[in-house]
Image (cartoon, rainbow, N blue to C red):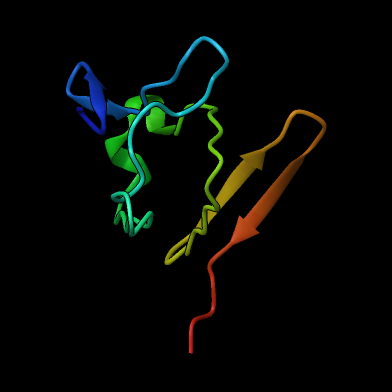
Length: 82
């Protein structure tokens, strides 16, 4: 299964009609996956809205991002990692 699809060469998360991400996160027995992404590589500099049963963690290395949820949104700035 293709993990990421593309529009005009830019990444987009494939989703179902209910907006669930439709690619595997890791493998059976080890359901964990690490992605190193740059938001500039995504279509319209945006990771399209999606959900999954798995937990998702993000580390912001530079700048800030806007996380949007159905009821609200949050601005997250560069993450301090020590």
